[in-house]
Length: 122
Image 1 (cartoon, rainbow, N blue to C red):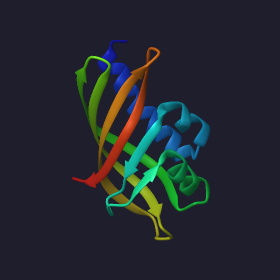
Image 2: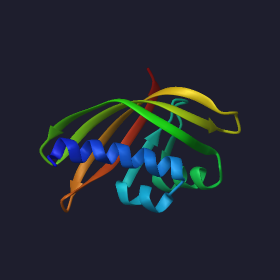
Image 3: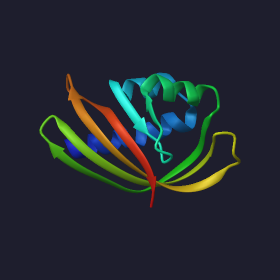
Image 4: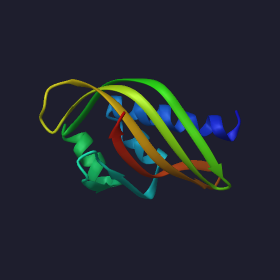
């Protein structure tokens, strides 16, 4: 598997962890300094986001990936994923979202870690 495909796999694993509500698996994918910016503009640390996943603030049911684009810059990378995601967030009902995630990654000891993500729609 080449580096581009390894990074694409991080995206697929991220969504598998989100759907399973598996904070341990997600922690393995995220750098210690990971931050997330929601569509609302709210920013969260890794632990704040994972707490929201654990307490049901964020619930993900399915994700169908339409596109995963990667640009490498040595030991850093940028990735944009576009997926149709069935989710219920902030107490709302289930909705199908066309989510775009803009991610940055850093290679740490040979493993690609997510350092940031920004959610929007497409």
